[in-house]
Amino acid sequence: MAFRTAFHAARRCGARTARFAAAGAKRPAAAAGAAVAGGVLASSFLQTPSACQQSSLVDVSSLTKVAKQDDVGLLPQPVTPKYKTALVQIYVTSQPFGGSDKSASGHRYDTIPIANGMIASGMSCQLMHYVPEEHDQFFKVLEGFDAVIVRCNPGQINAAGGNQIKFDDSMRALQKKGKQVWPSPDVMTNMGAKDALCKIANLAIGLPDTLAYYSVQELETGFKKTMAFQPRVIKQNRGSSGEGIWIIKLKSGNYCKNYGDRSCSDDEVLEMMEACDNHQESHTVKEFLEFCVNGRSAMSGKWDTVGTGKYLEGGKEAGGQLVDQRFCPRIVEGELRMNMIGETCTGIIHKKPKAGGISAVGGTGSVYTFYPPDAPEFATLSQNFIGTDIPSLMENLELAGEPLPLWWTGDFINADPGTPGTPCTIDKWIVGEFNCSCVGISKCLPAYCKADTPNATFFDIPVADVMEATYLGNLMGQKAAAILDSDKAKMSPAAAKVVTRIEALRGAACTGVLSKEEAGSLMNKLFDV
Ligand SMILES: Nc1ncnc2c1ncn2[C@@H]1O[C@H](COP(=O)(O)OP(=O)(O)O)[C@@H](O)[C@H]1O
Ligand SMILES: [Mg+2]
Image (tube, rainbow, N blue to C red; front, side):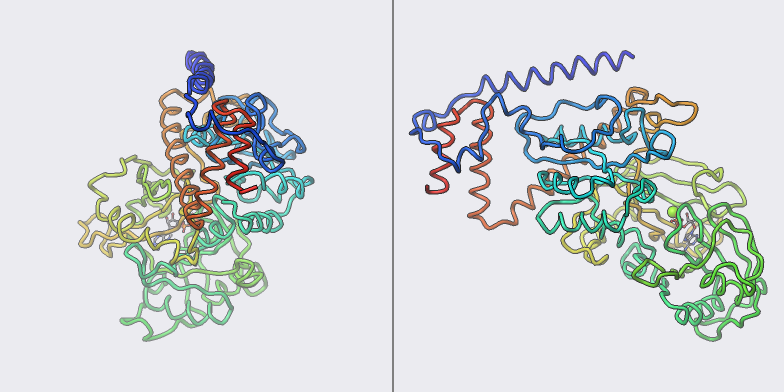
């Protein structure tokens, strides 16, 4: 409660400071003496100081306001935002609290620190909810922003009666109009897909021995060959939290000496563990391949998994694919998660599976240890990832021209081939997967509504955690502003000059440094009318 009171005081003070700064600004002598002749063109670019506070925001009044309460915890928007951003969420009416990521306000539990981070960097950030029935109008309104931050959990758009493909297509259309979308549908698809691991197989953080299968034929030939050589991990593309990620060994242990010396036969028996819950099953090669392609059938035998198989369904375009990697035995000692903001690592988490388990997926009893981003234990990995590979990462993922996501993670597996418990002979960690679709800020979890916390808000986050989330949000704001600055710099120097001058004039008119007529006259000169 003390924090809440202090916050409101700071908020009031922030608003006062902004007004004071505007009133105290000096009028430049040249501008003060400018001729007065505000034309039609000029007035369409300018607002009077009184209209400014509202009009600096994009008009969203044509859209349904979904948030049930005020924007609890949001800082005041800047009077003259450097850029205008929208944070897009989705409220799933059919689910308790609007989805398992919402505060009582109806916003995502980590929306406020991200939006405040944009505001702290001088940008506006309006909190929006996508309502599928308002699709066309929603995207028309989004055209008024410079950048859109997408915070819709995978699956939520369809669950709310919308269509993810339609949503993504409209986001791509916005990008074509010069708007930034963070992360864009292509970034989410290419970074999040399992075959991203093949595209980076030859980087310092890649495992060269990584294959992708898109057709039944590729799967059958490829898997029978890799499986005959060594224990493998077969990963489906569409699951989450380890579902359809199979760690597979030959029951006979009959591995060949060199890759390609032999291929498995249909009746060899596989010992399999699924990463979602570490449960074990045993199947023949033929049954496994049948399950991968056709799911449960007369030929695939009896399966205990909650999954349905059919991992290639829909073909490559629909994301049907399986990735085949060498099994890294040190996974039982844990894996690493690097939390990333753009190219900056903000922390490293070591996740150790429960004894006897292979997967450290949340909820399976794994133990987490937190390290600072510059932890000496992981210096080589940091150097390989951040120093060597990140500069070309987006290009390698066929995402040239896209910025690194504002908030994303890299999961790493120790690739040392040694027996767990013995000292490592090589210092090499490889990427297990990237996550960039709506990664949550875990420090904000107390703001999320559950059956036992139905009224959770931003103010339920302990102060120390708010501070950390604020730091993360602010860093995201800085990266976001830098992306937009560099985007502007991509214009021709002449165009950039005009844009900068228009902004200066709009700012001067908004804050009252210039009268509307003075700014209009200068604006006319800019356009030579
Ligand atoms: N090459 C590998 N060697 C050993 N274990 C692996 C390997 N790849 C994945 N795993 C294990 O499987 C888990 C889930 O795999 P991951 O690729 O992260 O899929 P998901 O998207 O379901 O989280 C990992 O957390 C790790 O425990
Ligand atoms: Mg994972």
